[in-house]
Length: 112
Length: 113
Figure 1: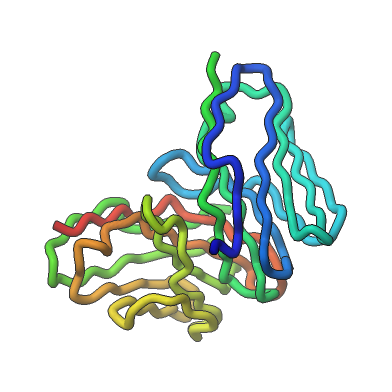
Figure 2: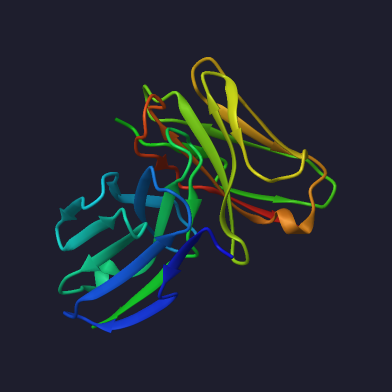
């Protein structure tokens, strides 16, 4: 089974709607990262979470970390077409390493 | 600061050949990690270099190798290319001294014919 499970795999929402993407780890999390990717391109860093209960926001995107559940969620409020892309969660499960494991990604489409 | 750069951006090779990809990290970053991304396997860690030493290695065959230079620039080499090596190869850099953010480059798209 996957060490990092991401859900849903794909999402189609109407512009203006809210949405949530989840990421669950089977291992202890030392750091949880959210990235966005346009198909075939590099990953754009969104947010990094380290401490249980930590919550960070940037513009209309909020990420939370539940350390007990080894789970993180990414919430987009009032989605826009510019939010479309592939969202990836990555996890450092060793501590202070450059090795991240990644979920399979969530493909988001926003319909105008 | 300039971001992570990778060259070349696109590459076409035939089976059996070898290929070298290059990555220049963000200025001041000493750690460079390499990843392979395919539709089937997703994003998988290849290896990490820190101060010219390999610090971590993923589960890939020995045909995949890398090195890091004193200026932190890194190269990745794949020998005896197979069709299954076709992928987007991404490198990422970070400071390397603590659990900190990895910043990714635009990737090199390798096609093996």
